[in-house]
Image (cartoon, rainbow, N blue to C red; front, side, top):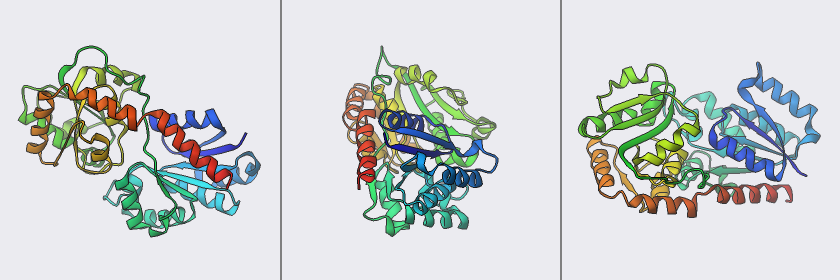
Length: 326
């Protein structure tokens, strides 16, 4: 059975979902970058010593770990794939990987050497081609997916707005539009809001109104009932790739209200509300969503048809097999 070396930084739900997909079709070796004292040196050493134990290298996100993994794969004449997700083709200060000279240098290297680059949305593909024209012809749009059996409606909806994002620091919270959500909550004082994923000190910086709960990160299992209960899901981001939280919410029957950035307009389509980032526009979108709660069924059907985990699996396996048999 062919073997894949999976190189990554964070054990995020979408990464773990891809790992499970790969394990169903290939032998999988893993290298988790932060678990090593000197990750670059140790990855090079491991790939040299174990070059016969893998046939293809798959890097989740185009960060420094992808530069090392892709370079070694190129030297060993093995195919490589980089899955980009959003921040890795962003130059937003204090957030995007391309915001520094070193980041741009590393990105030029790994995007030049990768056999294939997977983009989660058309918008991300456009940004990638604008920054790195050599990726033309090697880029494939392949969204992540969600388990539509796990994330599904159950029971009546509650008049509540939900938003989920990992926001360990203020730059990340700003990119995810948490200050906008706080402003929307102030405009709609009769509507309860819940934010999940806040790091230390984020709540104090937001100064949330009484109708806004700012909560820390929780296991994904704890989010399942939150998605099922909330009638409306709000993603007020300033920059995005293709957020899995929006997919999970839609699959659970929430009516999505999102800003028109990244892949979110494609994701939502006509099954929700795509609005400007101004608080008044976001508040109007939330109000419209509450008036159209049955639209949640259409949102779920859209995810089942276009963004299921099964669809992700078929696309990912096809790309890898094409490279292995090329």
